[in-house]
Image (cartoon, rainbow, N blue to C red; front, side, top):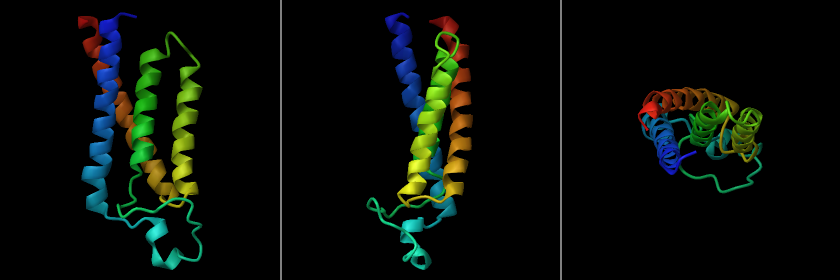
Length: 136
């Protein structure tokens, strides 16, 4: 792999992350304004606080969005040359997403929607990468 191609992949990873974070955190979360389960008064006796809760909104999970977007992008870029990127990438994104539920900062639907959103973003940026790649 050429140095130019490596820098291009890094740049597209940053774009992938930026799109995922912007869509989840700046567009959807403020519009939905769903309170995190760890801040929900009716769940106060049911939540085990494993990490500080934070004051932001819950839906969708930006962690799930970003990690699925990056994983899917990397899968589409490297799968032809390294097949293990598929199970490793999906397992990594799933574990990050599950951990957000486990620590009580997201509901399951938050991470599921984040995973779907991230997958779509990863597909989009990988298509852009593949379309522009022959020009490198």
